[in-house]
Image 1: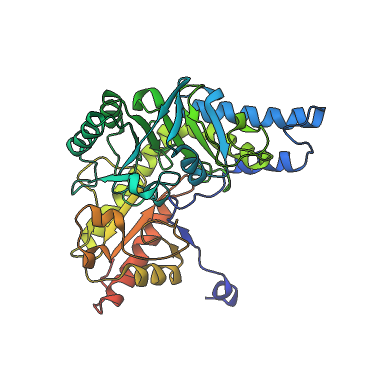
Image 2: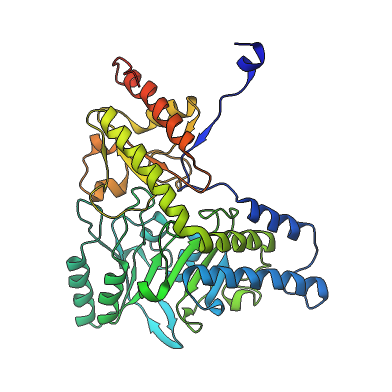
Length: 399
């Protein structure tokens, strides 16, 4: 081996696409075009109108991605802000005021939902999931019936697919139950676009939130989507100017929104094909792991999951140690969600599924994305083959 080869850095493999996926070339190009121009999207001169055209084109692209009217899209800084905007007791549904008394969520929601945002924490109620991580619909119906009988209206918030396990939730069925009991339905669909079919009419939800950087757009952009142009939270989270129909004051981040729109166009056009390719990569990754590492298991393996997501429990290991060891082996994975300032702690998702503390402590998430390839899977399996036995003080098994 020559000196140049020794100095060449090892190729990194990124398997943390549920945290963020790399910027798509089309999104980068759209952003650079905006950054090279001038104009505030609220200005009436030619430069401002050009910026406004970019924002509205992106709004149309995002609307088509989720099957919603473009007039019902509100751009935000991300999905967390979009969740905070809609999780409010004072809503308007199709032009009618709908005051909500309680927020009802599943036990496996993202922290931005579980914390209730503008609902007092005493008015947030959590519904259990089963051992596979799916919402217990009978429990939801019982809770909704109880609130309706007492004259209380609920806002139900249920994610479409879990960010840690990839388990897909019964959102359509939950929406039907919610509406049957006079409740409003919100869905955090951040992990879904480009990985599964996504249509608001099919889901039956009143509101939906998505994020740019989960689909290959830039970080710093997201959207609250309503099923009807006259459905909205009646109290803005950020008050000021009249941007975004008065629901999100402040000058729009036109470059980020342009990248979001470009990524949405690609996801809408190529999502089905991309999902099928990712499923093949994920299935091979899981098969190799389960066969090679005794005692390992895939969380939620028995139910429908996103085609790109694997949550693997390694018996006898600590997730934090394994994540660091893989990082040193040039493979990027995570221990659960990456939305808690990099902290590694017990997974509330696995705990809700009934996984014991010891087992849950050894769970890592490997998530694929648009830039993933067969070589990434090969490198990850090889790295696990070196790292896991060493951490368990066992001989390395030959590939």
